[in-house]
Length: 151
Image (cartoon, rainbow, N blue to C red):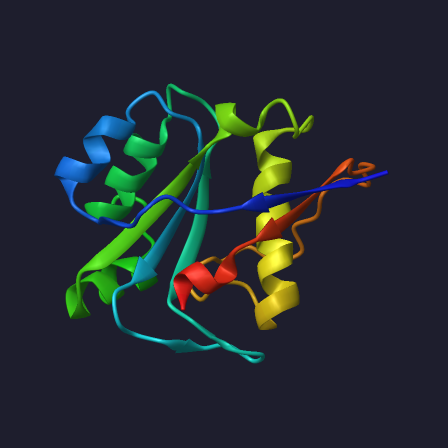
């Protein structure tokens, strides 16, 4: 029996060091998206560019986002989108889901990526992952993800 859990996103923050710093020590998923550029995915449009994760508090969401901000992550797509316009981000603190998600954070990221593919037809444009799967785990939770947030 799977329970459906709605996932809503926090208010968007501008992709700037001042907004990134407070996320030090937080593990979870983060979502980077454009302010106004609609990406035409096969099934529908979205402003979402990238889904990422930090699996440990030591390599927190703050340090992952900083790496994307200063280009150290070598994600050329994100770097170039940021040259064109200011980007936004939002995140999900993994601790908030631990009572309903009993798998690894990597599996949660896979769940979100595969769910995105289901809704939009391909991976987010700046994600280079393919063939990522949740290892045949029996999911007891079914997330209803609010992808309209990125419209």
